[in-house]
Length: 244
Length: 234
Image (cartoon, rainbow over the protein chains, first blue to last red):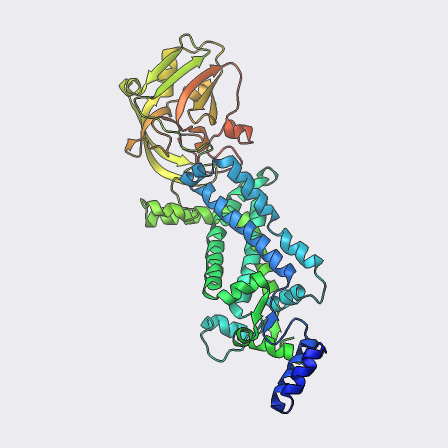
């Protein structure tokens, strides 16, 4: 766009005078593109490669845990998957690996990276996020930042669930080190949070299916500016104001 | 960042949930027994209740799937240190004097089903027929799933409340409960009550059963083993 080849000069000459406003718009867009390389006049980068990679590796591990976990509790499925031993090993393996993609991803990301920034955003809940949660996003005129209250709640809840599953899972697999009552308690809470995790992840996938642009952005990394303005007004606004 | 007031709630949620996990490990067994007793009062015979964590219903466990065998194919063999090796058909088991027991079924993972009806042959009746030799100190049980095993000492095996059951919950034993024939060791944790029982071997030394090899107590008295303090079944 900003290349000064002959073609561009030509076309500029042609449009010159035809509409002064057009070239003004062009200039603003170029300026904004230079200000934020993650943004051009059509798309804005929502998730960088690191984030997307971590998301999908975590998703595969999470679903593996879920499916093998259900099968371990359902005898007909257990038979279908070829018995308890294989399922148990897969479940434990996937479970203990589950936190690693996120932890490694965060440690590998630079402080100013999109990944680190998004985690800071997910941590900080604003008044309008609480308002969003109270009305489940139905209240008009709420201006969300990059993530709305529901997305922040979901992210924290899933992270918390993973921690609970991990703690109880450690007790369940190495019960020799703990009083046996701990094992009973751990098993009970592992089962309870299975249902809560299932609920949260079903909601997460349902909303992704209902908002395909959002799902696509977790694959390609990009969303259209129009979409971003509709769903994350404050985020786009803030990006516009970025000095450099 | 945000012009509005924002607080690090995300971190607080995650840390609180970590605390919930730790508390759950320490006190979860108490909550579970409360849930179990409440649910069994509210809906004592609802099979869907089994989906609720902590409910006092049978959780179906198997280590090697669900082996199938019809009553006409069924055979129970008694061998090892016996005076006479024997084999019983399903019909022959039915012709023994039946023993009826209605007792709680307590699992080592915490759930307990109250007043389960069992009917079968006292194990001691079967063992007496074969005649244990003097050096027969232990009894090893095999499942026809080909994997599961269990053990009892000869004294434990001679108890009145240890039966080779062919009826449970008021009908023939279903496939998932270990039919057509299973063991029911009333005073011990559920893993002793081997499902799909097909072979009884007497020997002079202890051979640990499936879960015992994985660290569970050999003498699995309810309330006095595996570090648990459940109410004994006697």
